[in-house]
View: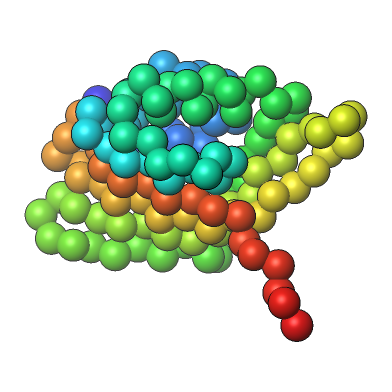
Length: 130
């Protein structure tokens, strides 16, 4: 699938996480993509590793991702290359309690590729130390 704009890729990614569609998610990531995931200390650099990460994440009860749309920043890099960054929140149950994990993200995309995500970094927003 060719994407017309970077926001469509982000929407597909959010939809894939929320619906637990692992194949859909895996197909968004380029075969040479790098994933620095929210809930793992390890960088992932293989299609199998990306799949495993999302399979594990999908086991969480009531998993959702909510984009904070006002935080979304779009950087055009030229050609069909974009960087999207901003804030989203993961929600899922832990010990029958719904928890929210505000997180920041960046996606490096090339819309010329059928699998446009080249780089994805996501990390929980750190607590303020003051």
